[in-house]
Length: 144
Image 1 (spheres, one colour):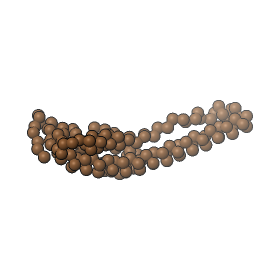
Image 2 (image 1 turned 135 degrees about the horizontal axis):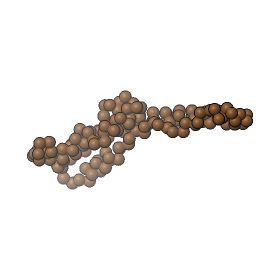
Image 3 (image 1 turned 180 degrees about the horizontal axis):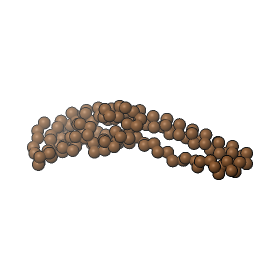
Image 4 (image 1 turned 45 degrees about the vertical axis):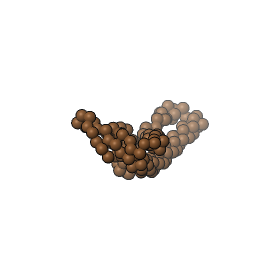
């Protein structure tokens, strides 16, 4: 691996393609596992929310069928807004980077500081928001 500086924090680095590919696949696997856990928990919460909405609708239908217009007027409006954050899926970003490296013919590749941070250290520009979107559903999101 060789470095040459471009300013204080910007570097270009030459890294073995296979080393980057292996690290990307490891990072993708970990992200996929955490995302799938978070997404399953998200769907379970949405399902529970929908069950509550259906229960509310049935209650209002019962009031309506009993001709209880006054009771309906006093009843709360249906709460049809689901405010559950959906876990962010960035698996395609990993897949795109992996495909690019699998297609590359050079044994060494040149990477910028930003690319190195994302590919090797799993510090993508979207990682903070992805962790936040999954942390509502799984404690392991913080390990990314």
